Image 1 (tube, rainbow, N blue to C red):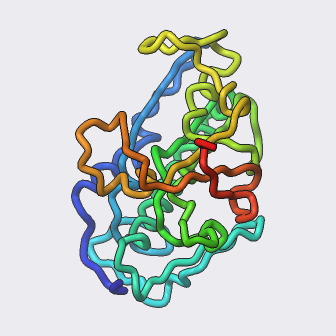
Image 2: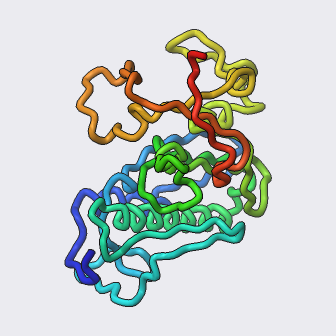
Length: 254
């Protein structure tokens, strides 16, 4: 990875500009009507190097000596990345992800400043994880990088304050239930006719297969509803995902 770069891809700028302008395109009303907004942004799919320390696009980028290649959160979880020998763009993915979080934080600050943060429920969910090798505690003893199975899920309920993290088992499939909780009684999926519920998540073991999970970006499968999992391993997890002892290899057919 070079310490100097020039410009950023136009498709990244397109996604970046929308998040950057979220405060400007947010309309705040004085009435008490209920509203719902859902938005998809692809900025985290567009890896590129940004100018530190603010992770912003620039015509010229020079991060020489600004990136330590190491992060640690308040819970002791460690993130590392090999800047000098990055051949998979994972470092650039990191830049795109941090940029997205900073822009979302900017918008959340705007909601607070305008008095509508407390009465708003917010769910931020990623569509999938990615094998970046950034978290040593997520690389199992057999070498499988479970970062590929840990997409981002952030949730703020009405009237919630502060920031906490939970070790409760969650998936990005919980998003509809989180969004409709205590708003729609017994919600029904209009496409299947089935009730939207998370009951099955705790009523039986949940299995994760490595067969397609870690090759989704390379897949050319036209039908993205069925996958051959015969060549994959199967895993289960409970509790804190950053504790390798909570992961196990399983055969769901036994």
